[in-house]
Length: 391
Image 1 (cartoon, helix red, strand yellow):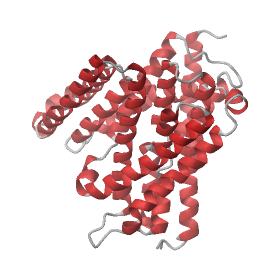
Image 2 (image 1 turned 180 degrees about the vertical axis):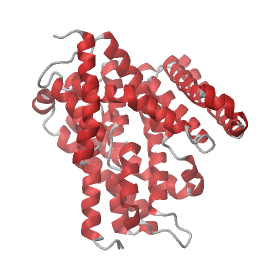
Image 3 (image 1 turned 180 degrees about the horizontal axis):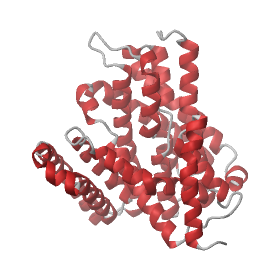
């Protein structure tokens, strides 16, 4: 086996190649990165060992940073504008697949809460480019109703936050104690004053341009908040990704007044930590075990029931606003999963709730949805709206 620095160099080369493949094929870059990790990992070539010290740090920090960016993408403005509709649709689109996943977990004898969580999530990183690409075909708004894209992004924000709470309860179920409850309560009490302080600071950023541009103060503040909230979550007995996610939600308020902040934060992550994280996620997957050693019904059951749950949840709650066909398309887009599934799988693995075989199965499941959701949504749009008219 090559030395750690040689393996790191190999990951660096793959991190350069993957965006080129994604651009050429139209496949989401994160899907390509995980697939390339599977190729060079234990499933096939076995060129990279994910448990080496550098890789352990890159993976752990990358996971926290990924959930921070997921929180950053939660558009609170959409929730403010369409709060009740987005809350209704997002809640239905989370709870229906969660219940179906919970039932599946009981049938296949796998932790029901975990299977419910991974069924309920939605990936903002896949939803956003998909809806931007098809926005001109799907907008319906008017007459007091939100547009398709506004409602989708608002519902996705609700779904993300509900899924994070469900994940927190999954972790908490293994470590519940009185001290943990008090620390969690403290974490939630800190959220509101932190939000108010960030709102106040966001109004000052234009007046401190020198501080901003010379020292990237908002970027520093964002990173420190991410680490503090992750540390508070860890201290409470839950995974740091939960604190990092809500730190991202808070920092999203700064984006409107500091237009280069999102670019700085994204470039910091996508230049190193996120490509390394997704490649190492693939390296840890064992495809053969995931296919041959896991329960025969788990993967197909997860794929089918999570899609059915999203479509049913959205259709039941959004039909009156969007119509049936648009609701089905929205549910299909929200089927896409990635970051929260990886976080849940990694958390379960570290807690000993799941083994490496189930971990590999969950990662493969997330890849299927991240690739399949945009493809299926585009298919439905082309079938139902070749001229841009979905009724």
